[in-house]
Image (cartoon, rainbow, N blue to C red):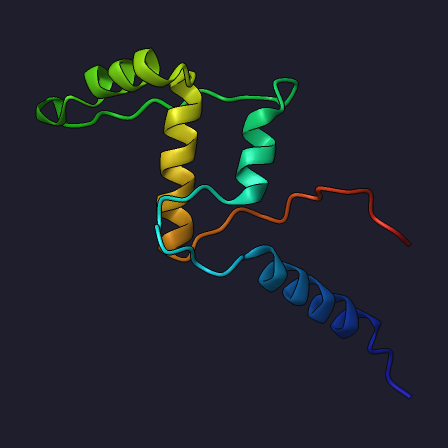
Length: 103
């Protein structure tokens, strides 16, 4: 009898990935619950994003203004916006375990 363990594991991974994608909210910019958990964790490792963007969009000025009005750190503003956009386009992050895995 063939060993189907690999296939069963792969199907579980696919099911977990589909479960991690919540139903789209009425507002596509509503942050995903997993993203809010990550953003709320100040002990999580962070990395730098450096991309050239059109100056005419005034993104830096707008981010600073939003930060001043809502007290949301600049990096969190960028992370929330990019995560929402990428999820809406069908590019969710790899599954982030939000609770301990059970064997």
